Length: 327
Image (cartoon, rainbow, N blue to C red; front, side, top):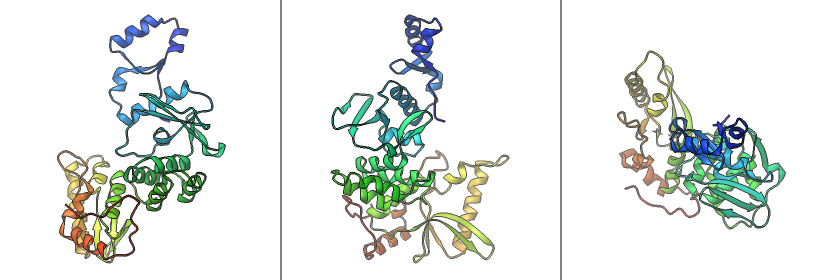
C-alpha cells in the first residue's frame, strides 16, 4: 500500500468545513496542497522524499482523471514500487488509448498512445499499466542508464520477465525509439539488486569491460566466504559497488555500525585470502553516501579489466553509447 491522501476537499465540505477554512489551514502551514482538492498535513509532507510525494500526487491526479486513463511511465513505476535513478518526478504521467489529445502541464502529462486491456492492471485501487508495459514505456523514453535501473528493479522485485517486456515492445515495432528500447532490454538482468549495481552494469558496457556474473556466492575451505555483487572468474576479481552499504542497512540489535564495518573488512580479507582481488568503492563511512561506480576503473585491477575488455569481442554495446577510457 502506497502513501495515502489524508484530506480531500469533498470530504471536508461534507463534514461542515468551508472553503475559507481550508484556505486558512493551508495559509497557516498546517496543510499542504498537492493537487486540486487534495491536501496532506504539512508535517507529514516534510517527511516524504520525492518518491513518496510523487506517489501521493499520482493518487490525487488519477482521482480526477478520466476513468479510461491509466497511470503510466514513471508514475506507474512508482506505484509498482520500482527503483528509479536520475529520473524527474515533478510530473504525473497518465496514458489514454487514443490517437490524439495528448497534453502536458506543469504537473500532469497525458500520453495518447495505443495499449490493450491486458496491459492495464489495478494497484491500490489505481488503474495502472502493467509492469511489462511500464518497463517497455520507460525503455523507449528514458536514457539507457535510467532505463536499465528501472528495468532491473522491476525484474528483480516482481515476477516480470524479459520475454513479457519484449512482447509489449513488439506491439509497437515502428516506435521511433524501438531499437533503443531493445538495447536497454538486452542489458537488463533480474539478478541485479540495486540502483548502484545497475549503474555499474551500465558503466561496464560503456567502458567495454568484460561483463561479470552478478550476485555470486564465494566459498573457501571454511564454507561460504561471502556473496558478492559482481564476479569476473577469469580475472579472479570481485567487484563490490554497494560494499558496506548492504551491511549498514541491516545493523543487528546490540551491534554498532563500527562492528558491521569491521566485519565487512574481515569478509574482504577472507575473500582475498581465497585468491580473489576485491575492487570497488564502498560507501563513505562518515557520510554514508554511495560512491560513483567509476571508482572501480580508477583501481589497478579495474584498469586491467578495462584493457581486457577492449580485447573482448563478446561485449555488446548499447545503442548510442560510445566507448571511452577511465578517467
